[in-house]
Each structure stands twice: as C-alpha cells, then as structure tokens.
Image (cartoon, rainbow, N blue to C red; front, side):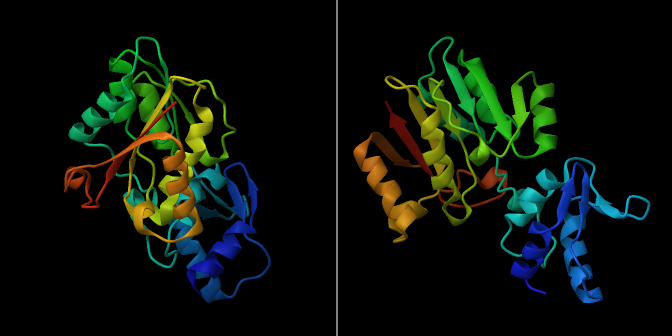
Amino acid sequence: MNSDSIRDVLETSSFNGANLVLPGTLTRSEYQAVNKAIEAAGGKWDKKARAHVFPRDARQALAPVLAGSDLTKPPSRKKELQAFFSPPGVVERVISRAAIGRRDLVLEPSAGHGALALAAQAAGGRVECCDIDSDHVDELRRLGLNARIYDFLKLAPNPAYDRVVMNPPFRNLQDVDHVTHALGFLKTGCSRLVAVMSPGFQYRQTRKAKAFRELLASRNSLVETLPEQSFKIAGTSVSTLLVTITG
C-alpha cells in the first residue's frame, strides 16, 4: 500500500474529537500500513471505543503525518513537522530586519519552541503566535507567550499586525504558501514581514514559484542569502534566505 492510498484512507476516515474510525473494510495488509501511520501520530486502537484514540484531537494529530512525503515509513517528528527551529544567529538577523517598535503587534505563525517570538517580545513587541503542534503550544504558553493551536494556512487573514516574523516549513514550497498567506495579516502602511525561506522559489519554474517572484517584484522587498550552515545546529544543512517585505 503506497503513501497516496494510505492518505486516501485517513482523509476519508471519521473524526470525533480524539477518536478516528477507519472507513469500510480493509485487508490485513492495508490495515497494517494505515495503522503504522496512525501510530506514528500517537494513535492507538481502543477496543472499547471501537476507534483509534489519540491523546489529543485526532485530526490535528494526523496533520503533520499527512503532510509527509512517505507515509510508508515511520516519520521523523522534526522532519514531518518541518520543525527546524531558528538558531540564535538567524533569530538576531530576523529581529534586526523586523525593526520592531515599542508596542508593535507582532505575529509569529509557526512558533515552534518560541525563539523568534521570545526575541520579538524582548524587542518590545506585543506577540501573538500559533503552531500546529499542541506540545509546542503548551511549551510556548509555559514561556508566557500568547499562543494557540492552529494550522496557520486555515486561519482567516486579519490585517491587524505591525510585524510578522516567521520560519515556516520549506517542503514543496510550503514557505511560499505561508509567506503569501501571512501578508494578509499585515496592516496597510508601515508594516513589515521578515521570513526565513528556502531559495527554491528563486529557480523553480512552477506557477507558484513564478507568482511569488512576481509578488516580490511588485512589493518593497529584500532577499538576502543567509550564511551556509546557518541551521546546522538545528539539524539541517539546508540553504536559507531572509526575505523582508515592507508596507
């Protein structure tokens, strides 16, 4: 059973809070493949509930697994969430470019462990943040941040923020989706978005990449290459850019 087939089964399952009920009748081998993906997300079969039960909302728990490229292999939690957190040097660059003013309202939409959010708060901003992972949000709240569990791309734009600072997931140009969506949260005028991004949009010839290049060309934007190995301490050697969009 390939990843697409597993994804089809999971996406057509019934969700009720922490419970997931698989659709129809699966063969033993099909069930084993689907169950492996469920267990990777923290779900377990509960005979009494007649469902796979998760320690939190089942749909949210499965979201990072469904986003993975290969559901036939146990995922690395960090890789499946694309959770490569911002090292101190990168954080310093982002906050410097953001030029956060005293009492600016700042959004961090993929907050992870809170490195950018805490630095934005220390710079004087009033920070709001969200993350798709409930464990991350619990930690963010323990750090005193105003955080909520949310898939940012499903959050309706609210042009109320003076600044957005972000280190979104990169895979398959997800960073382009996140940055484009985040622009809808900025106030009109002297607002600013600063994002860590992959250089993929610079050379790919997909419709999405071309549209993003056109967007940057139409805005007051700055694209800078971050030093090589900027994220080595976070567990990846991926090349990165710093993208700043003002106004």
